Image 1: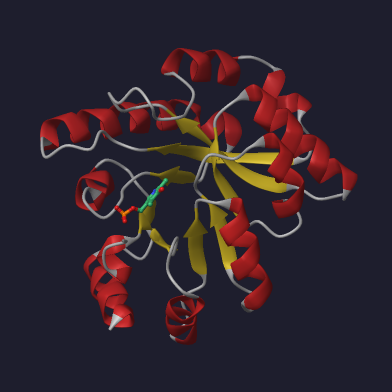
Image 2: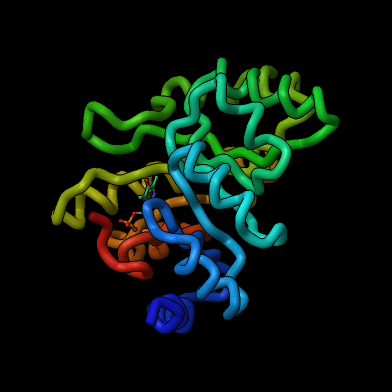
Length: 215
Ligand SMILES: *Cc1c(COP(=O)(O)O)cnc(C)c1O
């Protein structure tokens, strides 16, 4: 039972850590099953699938966009999205701010940082992130709330590599925490969430460990 999988993890970790149940590729019924037990935070990585599910499911679900977001799709999710984890460029920040302004809304975002060794992962480099957060640019965007940072560690069995990547992101998070009132460090997936919690995570994005493996 997927609710047991989720509850076992919840019981084993601090209440201050939010679990985003990553429901990508999984059916509506799986989401409803957790919803019935009071779970509200769900994550999707594709806009089309997110819109489809949002329309069919209860409106008090808190949707998290965790996958790469194209600027031309921003408009469709801005009215309802709870948190966009995957903000990976200045152009995307600007676009989200513009679309939010048009509907008098304010959108919660995380800045995705490239912490892994893999070439293909999206995100700001540490250099880009530091220069953005040290500048006065963030203050220009009145319709976004930068709530914190998100990262994905290298896909490896080597715990030291994962730990070093999370540590470095956590250090940067703490450095800017008070300046921006950060409250969210989104690190940790099914394979590495214990390491993430040891290194400051307060938001896990868990898919397969709850729903089973994806085909
Ligand atoms: C799929 C996905 C997850 C969840 O992955 P699992 O290993 O199944 O827990 C977390 N974050 C992002 C960005 C994802 O795309």
